[in-house]
Length: 227
Image: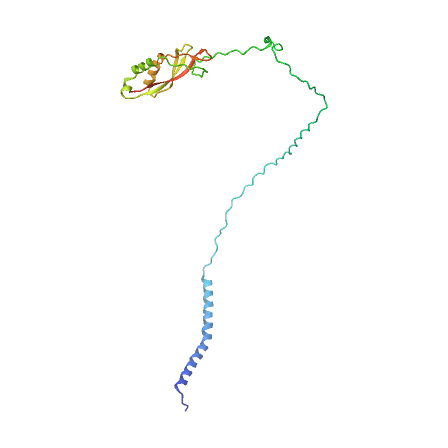
């Protein structure tokens, strides 16, 4: 009877377990492969059918545009002719050239056309500009001030309301006021009415143009103010 040591028994047991694992590896490997293959077939067989949606884009029909008629392009303009070069003439020129004197003997007065007719305009119809050398001046300023104080509307005066009415004065050759009209309102009708009433009291010196008195329109402000 052969004696076995503990070391020999352990080696035998390990060798047996290793051999069993080696022998069972082939069975487990091919069994797993078959199971995986069968599972894939079942998945593809039982999976519902899939179909991609139609993603086509509906495009409107493009209408053909009528091609316009072909336009004939006009030919380019002709080149501008270059100016001719000046040529020195051989014609003789008199050196003594004089211009005849212009005098009344060659142009008598009776042969001249008549002067244009002077058209008289009525400048008193509306304010117009008149050329003058000396402007008219107010001669009775004190009388005008007393009239302003006397005719000042009491309601406006007591309320401290004032204003300036600009008047147009048409003055004749003697300096007399012939016509008046309101140029710019004071903003109060009562003041404008008083300005028109006392405007006939104004006395002016006549306007002078070329040492001659002339009628003229002047603009003057009439101011109402409380002390």
